[in-house]
Structures are given as structure tokens and as C-alpha cells.
Amino acid sequence: MTGGDRVSLHASLGERLVFEKGSPGRRGSDIPAADFPRRELSELIDADLVRASIDDMPSLAESEVVRHFTRLSDWNYHVDLGLYPLGSCTMKYNPKVNEKIARLDGFARLHPYLPDDLVQGALEVQKRLEECLAEITGMDRVTLQPAAGAHGELTGLMMVRAYHESRGRGRRSILVPDSAHGTNPASARIAGYEAVHVPSNANGTLDLDALDRLANRDVAGIMITNPNTLGIFEGEIARIAERMHAIGALVYMDGANMNAMMGVARPGDFGVDVLHLNLHKTFSTPHGGGGPGAGPVAVRDNLAPFLPSPVIERGRDGRCRLEGERPQSIGRVKAFHGQFGMHCRALAYILACGPDGLREASETAVLNAAYVRSKLEGAYHLAYAAPTLHEAVFSDRFQAAHGVHVLDIAKRLIDYGFHPPTIAFPLVVRGAIMIEPTETESREELDAFIDAMLKIARECETDPERVRSAPHATRIGRVDEAAAARKPVLRWRPPSTAD
Ligand SMILES: *Cc1c(COP(=O)(O)O)cnc(C)c1O
Image 1: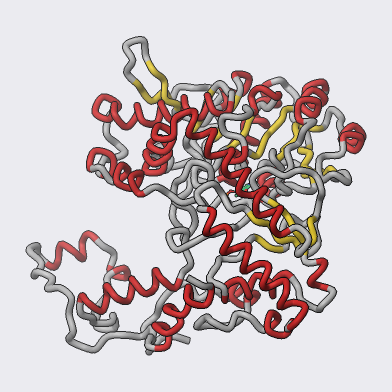
Image 2 (image 1 turned 180 degrees about the horizontal axis):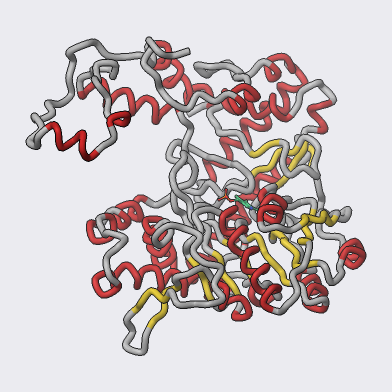
């Protein structure tokens, strides 16, 4: 398939479509008459929550509803359609068997208030997942409560805070390298700390001299992404950890990039005290689209007393129980037990891969990124020469000379049938193009992407206007992204009331 063919189907279907659908009286189902007295309903639900009539809802036949949603699902580029090279996001393919497992009745239909005795299977899934994640990261304990990476960061920093306070001395700041993910300084602030930036050196890694200048006894810890957002492994991480520990500070590792080193290196072995993982990145659970994520946090024993409550403890008889009596805990950070469906998927993925499979996944992810990097080097400016792991960061420097910028390149890629890579991030690279192919792509898919990127690089020289005015093959051209962010239309309204 060529790039053009990949999208033309969508474009031609798009022309036939309007969003407002239906015709009065058309029906997809017959709702049986209520078999309870009407007045009971009004006693149960406040009057202002009850609709007087549903006549303003669209009326559609079943076939129209199915086609409508099937088309909508197709308008959105997704990882089941092709390569999704968003750097720092690890958009890998999610094996469908994990979906089946999460949907087993015994998992999907459990009530969260059931007593421990009746949910031993579910607790066993969570406990085993905790044990697997502790093993993979080289840490002692894990909480599965946080619902996203950023939520894990906040949870981890709340534990850091509780740790310092328990030792009688709250501290003021968290050191955050300038190559950090944007959520890091935000989490530090929300946890009540000042985020102090540490500059990178010319190799794209943390500057140790700058670290030494900033390290003092007001520092609660450092938040370091490893491999960092340039895809570069922080080779001095053990020394960084030593220096932090020497001033009584802790090391938080943003482990969202764990896909680069599963089975190869363990953060617990190089001095990390606390880290989060993104199950929706590394451990192959669905990612994006508004669905739930999961950001488990792993800690060393020094932070274990502060873990969110309840924790899952395994008794001598092998049975698991939820333990809530923990005086030093930071408390609950999520309703019920976290995103249980994600835990089922992640454990299924880990068990199916096994230790060798996880290692192979990381090695292949790194190999694929190195392949893309070597093929695009020369056509695109490589931001840093240092070797990279699971992603490669280019810039638009060569193309900017022809008046074409990173956003144009991203939009033009859509014409070739690919989701664009992450752009304009990390901030330390001007005009950044951050490509993370992941391990789940075939050689053919990688080659098709490389081919598209090389064609675009040539177009920037021969026909820059074509790139600047892209996309050409989509139903909608360039949208006003600022307006979409500031005045989002998040809800359908009947045409009569839409403003
Ligand atoms: C994705 C990511 C995060 C945030 O994870 P969310 O689940 O989106 O909150 C944090 N740090 C890094 C390095 C990431 O790549």
C-alpha cells in the first residue's frame, strides 16, 4: 500500500458523512414499558435530573448506529491501523488476548466492595503484578493505585514528602532536569515543592557540576527520567544517586520509558528510591482515547511505610488481604483498587512474554529506533550525537532553511498515512521531531515510514509549499488548535440548542 492509498478510503467515506443523523420514528430497539410505578422514579431521582422528554435525541436504526460508530473509529488514527511513532508515548500494539482476559466475567463483573475472602483471584492478580513489577524494576514494594503516569509521580512525591516529614524535617525543593517530561515539574509543584531546573550538558544528559551547585539540604530529591526524554541513558545515574543520598535527598525516577530497558537494567540496582511505570506504555495496555491508564509506583523499603492504603499483604497461608491499618500511609490516592482491568492486561502481557520475552521486547524497541535513526540521519538534523535507546530525536533545522517547520512535516506525514511523531518536545531541542517506533512494528512498516519521511525531506527542497499547506488527503485540513484547546466542544447538543 502506498501512503496515498492508506488514507483515501477514509477521505472518500468522509465526503458522504454528516454528523447530524436520524429521522423521527426510526428505531434501533424497542424499550419495554416500565414495570415500576412512575411516582417511585420521581422519589428516587431529583426532578431536575429527570428529562421531561427524550424527543430531542436523534432516532436511528441499528444499522445507522453501527456504521456511525464504525466510521468514527476509523477517522481516528489508531495503533491497530498502523505505526504510531509518538516519541515518549510508547504506542505499541496491544495483543488482543489481553482484552479477552480483562473481560472474563470473574474479573470484569466483580463488585469492588466484595470482601477479601470472595476476591482471592483478583487480589492474587494484583499481588502477582506487584511482584513482577518489583522484580522488573529491582524495587521492594509496589502500589497499583495510581491511574496514570502523572498520578504516579504525585503519589511518589507525596511519599517523598511523608518520608522527610517523618524524619522531622520537611524540605523545600525537587531538582528537575531541563529534559524532563512536562508532568515532572507540575507534579513537584502539586506536591508542594519548588521545581528547580538542572541544565543538561552538550551530550544531552544531566550536568553533574550543575547538580553539585544546586544540591543542598533544602532539596527533598531529584526527579530524573531515565532514559531521558532525548532517549539517552543517564549513564551517571549511580553517581547522581550517591550525591543525592549524601545530602539526605531521595531519587525519583520517571520510569515511563522503561520500554527501553526491561530485563536489561533495573533502577533499584542503580540507586533509585521511587519510580512510576506506565502500564499503558510499557506493559501493553490500551493507551489514549480517554480510556483509563495505570501508573503503578515502586519503592525501596525506606518508603514502604508511606505507600497508599490499603496495601495487599500475603499471609503465611498464601492468601491475600487488603491491609488498611497503616499509620504512616499517605492515604488512598484512587477509589477502590486502581484500574483493575489494566492490571489484568498487564499481568497477562508480562506472563505471556516471560523474562526473555520482556528483554527481547526492549532490545527490539531499541533496535527499531536505531534503524529509523540511521536511515533518517542526514535527511534530518540529529539533535544529539550521543547513542539513543528506544527513541530518536531529530530537529527541523535542515527543513527550516526552506521555510518548512516541524508542524508542516507532521501534517504532511498524515497525507502519507502515518500518525506524526511527537513534535516540539523535548523543549531542549528547537523544532524537535521525536520518533519512537516501538518493538511491535515490522521491518516493512518501518521502511514505509522511513520512505515517507525521506520523501517529505525531498519535498521540502523541491516543493515546500506542498508541505506547508498539508494535509491534503484528510477530510479536515489544519484545524485551529488554539481554539480547539481553549474552547473545546466536548458534548453533542441537539441542533435546536447548539450555539
Ligand atoms: C507519558 C509520560 C508521562 C506521563 O504519563 P501519563 O500517563 O500521560 O500521565 C510522564 N513522564 C514521561 C517520561 C512520559 O513519557
